[in-house]
Length: 69
Image 1 (cartoon, rainbow, N blue to C red):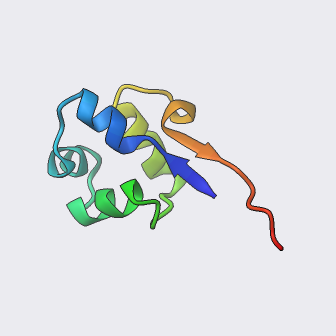
Image 2 (cartoon, one colour):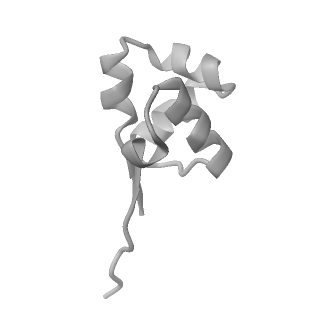
């Protein structure tokens, strides 16, 4: 599972979802889906988002393996 802190860093920079989306070249709906953990971005998009938020990719995104029952 890939989790993220996009909404936290976006709020700190006082960016709207639309402003962040425009800066990385995606739709606002894509940012909404990522913030809700309903969409896992490509590695390139993840780097673009982290750069736009002026954070390292590891600060914005975390990966953990879900345990299967």
